[in-house]
Image 1: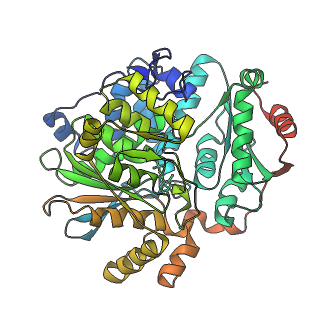
Image 2: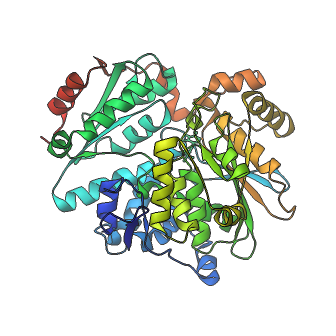
Length: 465
Ligand SMILES: *Cc1c(COP(=O)(O)O)cnc(C)c1O
């Protein structure tokens, strides 16, 4: 498989290079040159597979020609073998035609594990084949840091440095990072805010000499390999509910548009998906886009669903590229406009096409708490605040009553105990594999918000130099 950039000015690459590159050199995002297609008979033949085998079958065309091609079944088995539910991504029925899909049975109990556990193994395999190493640097305000650390810990060819704002992440989130004792994991508590951490990362990447010296790499959601791995659970759910013979729909709580874009890829590959119901919190740039056709950035406000407190949905660029018929110049024009003025408007015909596949709903904190409490009263099921927004989006979408809807549960309620307790009066317990989290010793280094000191620390502890 060959990959092209949404901006049309970067080299065409194979899977291994796309994995390591993350962002394309022209500022665009990589997408496959053509969408692999499975016929109805081929989908039907996949319906009986377990999750790792289904993953291997779906990912095979995307990694064709790569050094991981022959190993993909072994890698998906290693990635998902340690998940705490045998089904990996189990469906739970809430109403006659409404299910949740639990995407929180990985090590850090949020859906990012489903992509990052595999990406960590892919990194290691490709780097070993090339005899090279990388230094992963990242900033986190919550879920991504711990999922990336769990994915990269003990990988021989990877060193990982994650910066979090000292005193500004929740105790569970901090401990999920700082109690990992692997020698290739480096937690840095920066005396500053999340934005300070993020600009430190950007400045490290902008320093070409430093970047090349350390083989800097990123694991944020613009990496194609993360999207690819997320396609699998859409197929998994659809096949359980009657696809390819029956249409299904998905409801997805959305921030960066990465998760729901993976569903769109599953649809491109031939799965009969009627609709995607997108849910946003008060940071509703996407819902405003679906309502108006204009993408306009506003300031970020904190909410009960912090992993969706985002103002720029980076992965939307991949949808635009497809909706504009792979017109890289059109996409580049829109992205340049956004950079200059914080806004762009999608061509009316293209926008109308997008609305055939997507609907959107915004839910504020009161609405989020209401969905948690009403769902608990009606079914006994406990939703986390992000998953509650997915359920709200499913209900607001008003789909045909015969279409089964799957609302993606993106985090375990115990990851956000304060919000859940505020909504329903009870504090959810951590799952057994995290039971010792609050007493295990922590290991992190505190550093000032100072680029030179942080660079010196990374250089001194990375094995790439
Ligand atoms: C990251 C995250 C999201 C948002 O996912 P996107 O791919 O950015 O749309 C939603 N819920 C949880 C719990 C997350 O960690």
